[in-house]
Image (cartoon, rainbow, N blue to C red; front, side):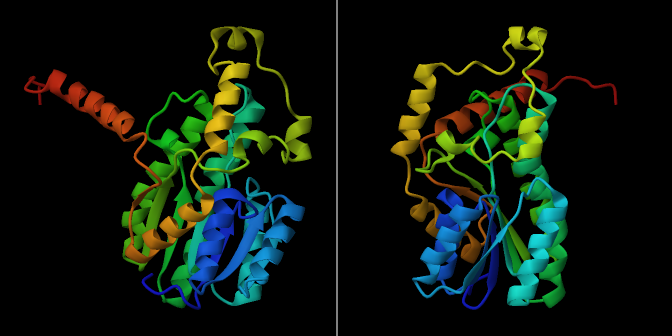
Length: 288
């Protein structure tokens, strides 16, 4: 997608943070943008702000953890703009306790919506024959686990794996694929993650089973750790910078998009440990 002028983009989690940064960068590059978010009021505000910049944008509310709502949002995009060229699977939530309900919610938003995004939008992009691009927001936690939430880590590792696989699959159709693995970004993610949980999820909430809680499978957040995370996010990277980075990644068909080098050594350490695993068995007779 060397030229984004006149193209149509669909962005989830677009009412604030990284999603709004991406939507803004694409609009400024001349794209028409459908902003999608579960939160109606922030969505309306984001659309209004972009229209003040003379951007051709529209908004559609959807809970992307429900396939039917994501499908309806795709149909609304086609009805409004006629085509879609760029899909940005950006919506995300933080991890919760080790319960079926928390796993369903986190995987539903962070991973299943990405899977469904590929399933629903890829045929729409292929149909017009003009090529396109898919960007999926993972995290550094999608490359290095152990940040405090196994639920979040699993969902973000899945996004990386999916993008790596789909890149080869969709290349023959003229569709590029990128995975965004940001570090600390200045968003409201850390503080508002539970403020927009749907009623159907909130009603089903149950505490972890005592025997599971006793194992500490999800490390308890202390006041200190929560404050540290909040401080890091408050002083994080500007989402507008991330949006421009994603635009550049689309235009140049980059697979991996990183916002900074803070966690490069941790990624290096992980791959060094993997290499060490191979070295331990190198030269052994396998009986083949």
